[in-house]
Length: 298
Image (tube, rainbow, N blue to C red):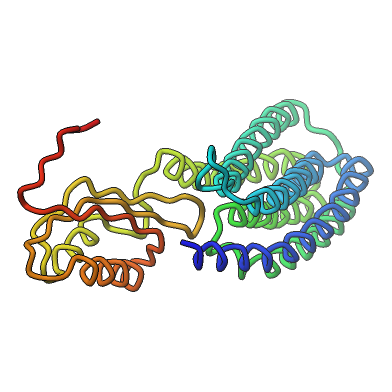
């Protein structure tokens, strides 16, 4: 467990600089989009700026989560503060849903009563926003695979980049054909992207908080791997769950037939679970066939 924690802290340290760069990019261009949206009268630009505001908040929250997750375990919090990162991802998803709802309500009002929009300004600002988002995606790409916290930020930036594409399209239609209604339509498109990102993230977060088996680990395959070790007669009370992104745990009761040293068998099972499934934190109770648990299911 200690080696895994050390590796995890190293990865989090490498992730921090990516988040600081993304925060600087997002915050700077968010101000530009607010100014551009007010100047051009574009709801789509203002919606994109609001999304960028949530991006900045998500990055700040992710940085806070990484910082607090480094605090050592205590007698009351034996796993430390790793779950703070999962809670941060939950907040990311909730904020995305709230932003999408606001944008849809505002867009419906614009559909009923379209306003004049300055297409050139919309296109220029949206193009710059797209460039900033693409750069942010590249910066975060190396970290989002191993952290739900970082992935939540990455999804924010991705949906914002796609939203910028929608704003560019609406600006083109306004400039070419005078279709001011394209602005609220693009806003609804952005809201749909935001909701899709939020749904995927929230599903993963809820799975972790409910201590479900990690999506990439088949518990039946884990059971078969344990049963396949010489000297194992049975497995029961097997549980696999995620503490935080990239930190999976397992506990279970293994019945042995007495043909091998229990210490050797335990070491083999730990190595097999680490090698085949990436499970570093393994807790196994070795039992003889005649062992009876008087506690039952307590």
